[in-house]
Image (cartoon, rainbow, N blue to C red; front, side, top):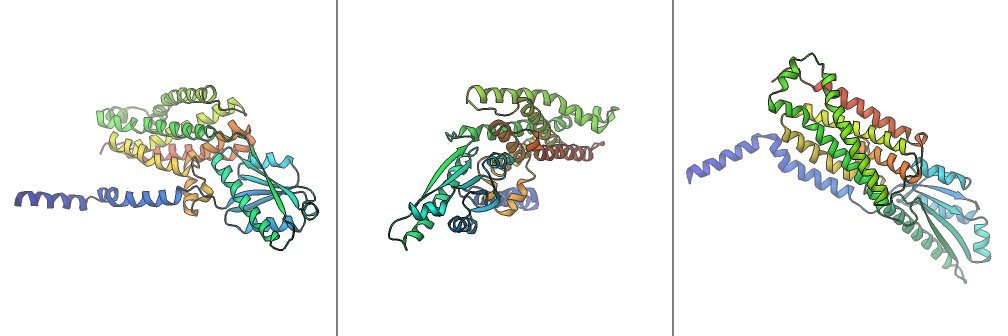
Length: 368
């Protein structure tokens, strides 16, 4: 028993001496519970909306002030005509437009009935439904306040319109998200083991003594996987269109080019993981566990980013999947062109250059 107790003590010493083991044991659970606790929510906060006020009277201003004062909405802009609704939706920031009918106050006073139209961007049906319900509650509270002082009950009727997904099909939300996750994880995992495989098989020496520069090695590792991942992306898009009836309102060529750019970004990230990892097992762990949770939780695929704490909103900006989901939803569901997604495209291109440059810097020209 003394030998056995001594062995147990030795294992404790080894665990406490290894900082990586302590981080996995204590740090990861804390990080995950905080991430899940703050990121996973069906509520909405600070959602950007636009106002189309045809009436511009005292009642509409009171309702706008109530909506603006709530923690759920942030009034992004005031638009002046119906044509602007599609434009603000295609830009992607505004999630809903509230349209007050003409002579709103006159109809409310004379007929005791008026109408507010709630137009939502239903590319994310869950968020669209939640926005509609929250606005309805604010309108009901306002109406109750009016009825407390009136002999005849006032009625404000909300009319809901779901743009881009009128049937609220959840597949319109899940197909772009699942496509992003598959391309991100598979592409990153494939290249993350490429250089570490050379190290483990002992063929790294051949690469090091060859006339190839680090840039040539890294690009040479990426190019074959680009073709394989493009085939993968093509299969996913074809299945989405013909099996799940996913529409493609925009250009298929632009969709293909943006998919290739995202694939290269993911492959470059995988190469970076490969250069900093000593073994294939470590590279697989980093690419699978290190990327899966951030891609699912912080990309806006399932949970609205605007409802998360500010620090998570900032962190989400370094997740390539976030920008690709905005691009793919815009092209497939809204039919937007490059003029609406140029910023997201530029960000992905910048990330690709950064990952490749950092991989070249981390590429070791000598064996340790």
